Length: 502
Image (cartoon, rainbow, N blue to C red; front, side):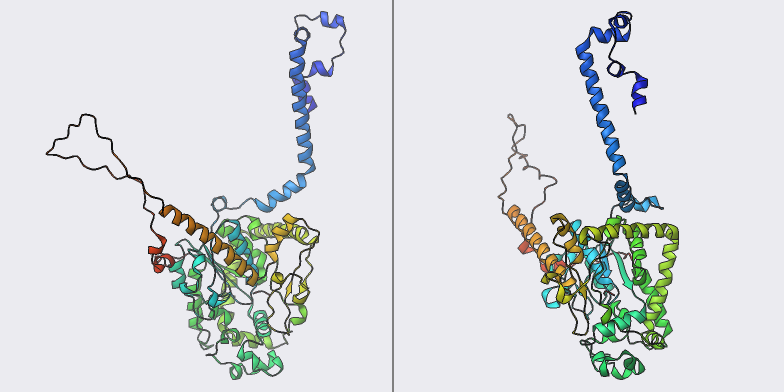
């Protein structure tokens, strides 16, 4: 930097400013004599240049000092894309995520809740009569959606999938996503989690998974309200027939093909980070949009070991779920290969690095300190506990983190029920403000318009002048009370669709 300035000779008089009178007199025609003849303006100009030089030096020093942080930020949130056109698209915001049971879907739901809030989107939420689910296990209907959360951009609460009803409600460019989990581990989680709620599980002596699998048809009742947890739960959540005979291979194949045409991405729980990389590219999101904290996990003491021989029985009893998992696990790896396994590995590493920094920001350490439900101080941060035999881990934020960090991290660790309630309150307030503004506009009196007539009108009495032309581009504001509810809730059928925790 100094050599560059010295080579130009701009600051030479101030670097070598101790000259003898003889040296000054010997070069009156030179540039140095001109600078001596006009000393004040020249000196002021040079001082400005020196000041600018110092600013440049300080800036470069600061950039070099912070190069590691800047490099991490650039790599983490603006990764170079192997397919530039998709990465240059705007973020996709119309999304249906089918939240399946015991598949890490609560973590994914939290991610979508936060994305919706950051981007001022409307997240469809259930009416009060449905609780925090869309009246599951009933098949989804638009009437299950709270009117304050319509028209919706994002749908992510538990439901039984109903393609027709969702396509009528959502925009035509909606992308459909879901997540599956390996059937053996998922069924163990279902059996333990719903042991006090599902009648098929409650009948089993001593809550033994092995006893149930020895004679599952003896304990299972297809018509019971919560029977979906006990047999082909994934199939039921996806809108299929959970009680099809196990030997009906044709149904499983046709159902998988039908789902493949609807869902643009089927995530795999065992490869959650890789699934998020595919999600990021599908929706043109940034890496910061897919950061997460694991939610709704059981403590290790709440998990049952699966004895040898039981995995085969679990897959046989849940044969359609097993077929769907194998089918979409294969398509999942094909999608990863298309993106490039080396590139995916790089993005996963960047995601995990960003996760570590998030953990340090929120918890002051690389891994958060898990707490059981009873140990969490704030009630709104306590996850729902299904029964006394199962404990769910949650989080408390340290008291010594900044207020900004608390505001950022709170939503990452907020349980499903608390976040659903908070989101419904905030969206209801937003709808009220919009309705108030619309009402105020509709009550503003419209001033009559007058057309100035020419001073010497040439219009004949036999041809009377026409009235003023209507104002183009103006739209009348209807009274919200005059709009029928059906017109507000339902939308036209689209032409073509785009297709809980551990």
